[in-house]
Length: 274
Image (cartoon, rainbow, N blue to C red; front, side, top):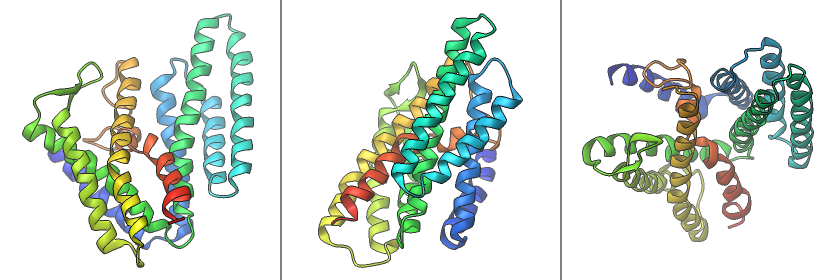
């Protein structure tokens, strides 16, 4: 717990300072680099055969695709589709030359999974950062729902937890902790709307955002469980050791995996049209 706090508190302060006062260019750069590094962590977790060339190429490809997500979305979609085809084709041909077809198929599948998993998470995060005028405010809301919810689930589970949520995947997660996270997500969203939203909010937008909060919290918990499945498939406790007491990058941001795309959908189609 002590190590977790000594790492988590300074990291949270640094993240808040970056979002609140960092330049837009620096914020975008951090999203791209952290996303690309998260892919390297995924690679180290999921691949039995280590390849520096594969890591270098995928690092560049993931970083470039995340960057494209902040611009024209149709261009980003075409680029994503082309990149996926290239990964499939080059992966199958390259790995299958060894004659180990089962291993080749597994590694190509993992490569496509890793590319989609990281690009969707950080690409839509980049899009939110790049949102005109209110990008930082919405980014803070996303982080509050995911990270405060995660912390609330942890302490709620320790205090009241009796029934496991998914014992085969993550034995320490409880239903009581999950409910605590849902309640916390609504509370922090109410506080955000009251104190941090920089302009007058229409009642329609207000209620759309409040009602979305528990749904986004559930998606954050689903992302956490998904990453636990990845780790269990490789018999690993953590995805890495980048953050002492927390594990790797993916251990800290897993809640964003499914939340970020849906958050952007809400922002684009629901909230900013109200």
